[in-house]
Length: 229
Image (cartoon, rainbow, N blue to C red):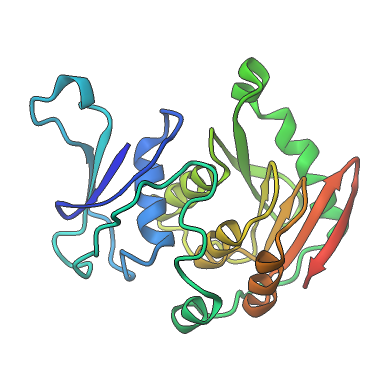
């Protein structure tokens, strides 16, 4: 799917169809492309190309967002743009996360709650998921995609469209490992914590520490390993 911001193509990503508008808006927000400006419209680009009618999404700010620099490489669904922004660059544009810290016992229950709502994974065994965790441990939103990064972008995109970002005081739970890119996206959304069912990378831990974010991995069977926060 290609993502365009105010008429300029900014990324192309492999994705699982569904929640495409959320994916496009979440990506633009998490990459800092919106620069705080509201999204006025999101739509498919239907220019007569029937084959790709639902594979190009336009995000519109009415020209208010800064002119984006197009990405030359394709975004993979597994690793996104790992390494394109270092921690210092993120810290320069993002404030430390705010909100009351999560109880680690609450976060330890999040993967089991996520697994119960992974309907597409249940049918295919081939997709990841991300869930928005409330302070009491309930999941308010769950999104699935072939890529963990896309699933998080979909969650954040929902928040942007609902006017709920920054998602202060909430956490995100993800299937798979916690990469730098996932911590980057969680930080950009203002999330208080990130919990993953597998290990984090060293750069993910360093980024979470810089953000003041709680980070946990190997969250399974009601237990987890704390890496930051």
